[in-house]
Length: 483
Image 1 (cartoon, rainbow, N blue to C red):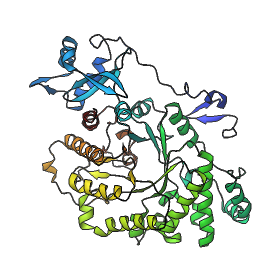
Image 2 (image 1 turned 120 degrees about the horizontal axis):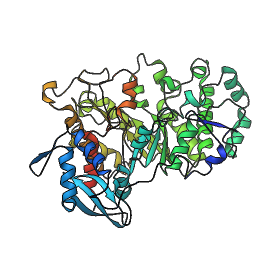
Image 3 (image 1 turned 60 degrees about the vertical axis):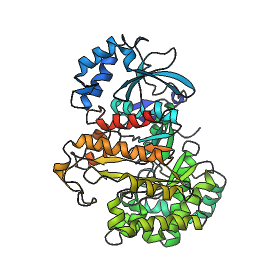
Image 4 (image 1 turned 90 degrees about the horizontal axis):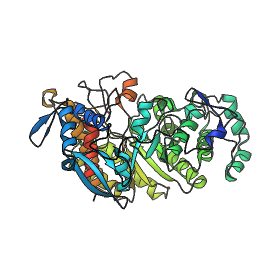
């Protein structure tokens, strides 16, 4: 179809693009193995071991403290006492449940296998989103965790500084000089192909999502900071030229990937950039050069014109923490004023993603969060999958407030982290959200880990890609919502 070169580098291996057409077999994981009876299946040991490991290698079941071996033995001796029957997707299934937490599933006529978040999300008809990065999906452990998701969030691989990283000042000048003919191509549903676009990171991630029948949310068309290519930032372009460049980057990205993306992020963390007037440099580039609402409107109308079937969302961070709302009410007020102005102008907008980057020593209050989320849905906007992380580091980070809880009050940070993840998931489901989501796949691949905060441990899976208490807490909430 002309989208791939003769040979495409994929995760360090050469992939024949003709073979990539057989997408259902490409990247397919091994089929579940084992016998049909739970008592005999070898994988039971691993499922129980992971569960018990998350709770410090001992759990209490019906008043009896057990390690992994004794719990596995108890299940083998009396599996009926641990099996519940549920209706999922119109079919009755058997679920292995320990302390209200699902560990394994058996569909009729199929072997027992590990249950995933995707099993529950699909049954609840909601999206469960996790980030998929080109740099990480080569790792089998990362791919195994992603089996929990039915939606893949692009984070880095479609950003301007990736797709347009090889553009020079001369390339941008060529775009501007040839603008009328380029715009005519856009209106015809095509784009100029003789520029140095870089799709080598994005294409494999799209292939991964398609192979695993995942929805895709693409971030982000209007971002700032390092997302701005130096050739644009240092180009000394006029306001009208910058508008054309933004329309160009948006149009090319959307047309190249139309039909592969369910949700386009048309704006990312620009409200807080607008408030941060001092010293923001690249961070507030679009806000400063074009204006927050005007830039968002340009991107939104461009996307809707080129890909009318897709959904459009905006993203903001830190808003679910009641301390932000109390100490900086102008932030929350500015966010809602932003939404209201977009809607007043008739700008196409469907949903809102809140990053929900929270701190275990300053957890959000459920009542505050629920009230805040309902102010979004009251505007006719749906809640897109949040990018929830719960940071454990005991030291205050620069962008968090002073702790509400003292370190001594959080006696078991991992248990407290699980409670916060559980609360946020519960709150989203309570307000009728169509999606839940997480900002990291696992601690090993966390952006905070890469940035030096190695004790942040903010996700559902640890550095060894093993599930933490937080994972099982989320699974329990989802399971509790099954009919």
